[in-house]
Image 1 (cartoon, rainbow, N blue to C red):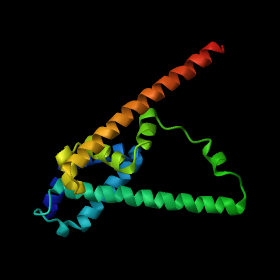
Image 2: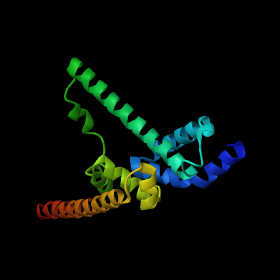
Image 3: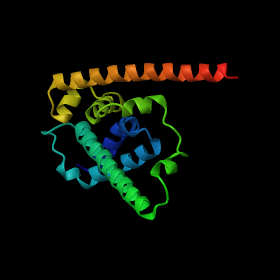
Image 4: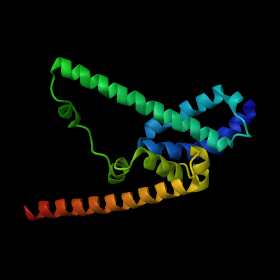
Length: 179
């Protein structure tokens, strides 16, 4: 792949790839970093791209997904290290440190209730705008498996969001009645 081809690759895919990464992480700043990491890896490995094995799009999304997974593993390891450090220093409970952190919006919380496979399927379908057949090819899974995963995830999201909205309405009503 030549430099001009790589520039075209960036122009053709960066915006949708960024959308996928935002959707997958829930954090625009992190998504920007992961987008840069994705294209850096792609540039370093541009000689590895083989059109016979798949499209440029699936190649880039595979790299991006690996960047997301690598980041998640690093974050988990950092969290475990922090917990060990806090336990040894007896500074207090980790929960007390987390009290000041803002809560995620309803959709992000609903996404967290999904399994990792379901979150990945939803992120690829709606964040990356891949079709279900493209997802199946990308993940090397059967089409029916991917279809079922997307369907179940959407059903769970609808249920979770409807429960969340009922709970928030009940909280608002109880706050108003106490005034």
